Length: 350
Image (cartoon, rainbow, N blue to C red; front, top):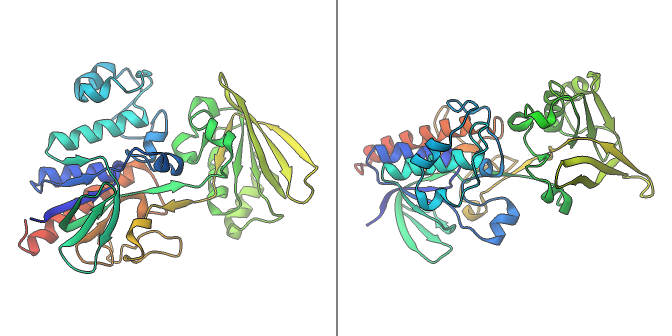
């Protein structure tokens, strides 16, 4: 018998969709992703991008404070014992995701720790196959697979992730380690301009490292960054290595001229922000849903989470190339579950 709704993905959008679908008695099946080396290298492990961050200061309802007793009481003990100790600074990304996951399970969501390898959206019910070989059908599907941040691929980038290396200034910029310190932003598009300008609220100085002699950003965004006295642009330059140590995390970067390889310079910074875009996690869809020119799923109906295929809904960063925040992802997860519930009712499948 086909599932009524299958949710693919496990970040804030996926878990919120699961909570709402479960409370609507739809008994959602959630494929949260697989714990494997391929997903680790791509940054697509279960629980989404938020699980790769440390403190989460801007998610409503979780002010700074000691949540140890609450976490111990709320999360399944088998999972809790393997989680990092609570730092008593407010909720962390992994903690918030585990709380959402537990909440969805409490309402009856069924969770499978595996990836979806193939899906046929050409007819309903949709045919789905997991990486582990499970095959089933589903009347409705919610895609909440998110988008992974692009990095340069340096070994030193990977080593200092969550220790000064970030891909989200809005998420992390206000953290203590970045305040009143010099920072560096990598990129030359609108995202880099926006990130650098935002970071000037907290940093003593922000370097923008760009491999060309002019930005790709829109003129208004570029002019705004160039006019900011806290921003110093390193033109025709690329990152050679992220510098740091185990105790302090990122302490600097070494940049190299993109014109003359023999010219290098070291910048003393406490934070490194990659602003070279995101890649939506849609490979498994094999082009069956309409996307933007950047690869994000399209919401063709205003203020709805419908996709280009009836019965398929999208939530979170896989369709949102603008906000990219946990709270907005959760909001669209809620909307997707409500849209799916109403659509199933219209089909007589509630």
